[in-house]
Amino acid sequence: MVTGAAIRTLDDVRGLLKDIPGADETAAQAAAERELRLTKPEGALGRLEELSAWLATWQGRHPPVLESPKTIVFAGSHGVTDRGVSAFPAEVTLQMVANFEAGGAAVNQLCRTFGAGLAVVPMDLERPTRDFTNEPAMSETECAEAITAGMEAVDGNIDVLCLGEMGIGNTTSAAAVCHALFGGGAALWTGPGTGVEDEALENKIQVVAESKAVHDSDLTDGLEVLRCLGGRELAAIAGAVIAARRERVPVLLDGYACTAAAAVLEACMSGALDHCVVAHASAEPGHRLLLEKLGKAPLFDLGMRLGEASGAVLALAVLKAAVACHTGMATFGEAGISGRSSP
Image 1 (cartoon, one colour):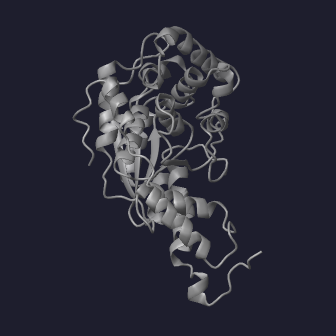
Image 2 (cartoon, helix red, strand yellow):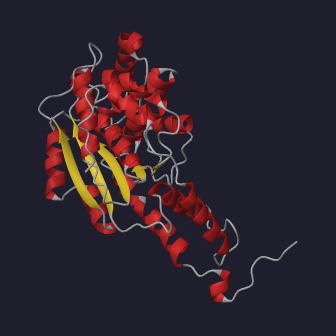
Image 3 (spheres, rainbow, N blue to C red):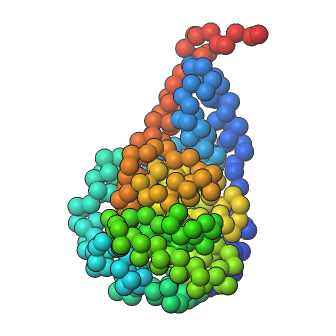
């Protein structure tokens, strides 16, 4: 477990970001050298080759391993739900947490299928964040506490971390965060979420637009955006991303809300998400635009928009294939096969 005991303020978080480790170039070089010797044309496995190198680089070892993946789903309550931004009532968050704990959700089945541990972390569900169309969603202390909780949820004895969230209202929060970070009209970032449409969707867009206008002078960096417009589960995701980097654990990010939570770190420091891969392109339209802004190519696009780390866990199948090929294939020398001819 990574301790977050030293975090009291958002300046403490900024300090951590300045001191996170970089890529392990020795492991990256070893992965590149082995890849050239495997029994296939160079680049023939496409992105699988990139993924095995990425795992080695950010695990800080070669060969990379994928034996102990872990999934963490953070759950939070949002005061902005009082503005009618969701098709489901706020109490569904608490009910879904019970469903996760009982093993009845999609993420439970996916974790079981791909051999991933699962932790569900409720973030003070009985105390929603404040309605950010009127005041900041969290105080600095509350935001720092949520980031700390996210850091402390990360166990260093894992080799890949899948992150996800649950929280009625959090696509509104994600849209507000992205609108504040990247600008553009609120409608560009605001989608149906749990299924709002027509007048309800127009209301949601208006809520996102209002939120940026209310807090505009306070949105001085990504962490202030998170404090003013985020949720406790989004802050916890940001904390988990920081902790994973410190522990050399590569991260699979899930959909729109999860990626928006991580984006606040990239806004604070370029390269903060280099150890992260986005699992899939959500059907939520703002996610695609966010991926463009971050320069992140998703691994797949299956029209998913569930959240709860479902896409991140599904991406483990791709990572396992990448590791198996990189570590299990014979080299040209081992197989007695002639390599590429010299020009």
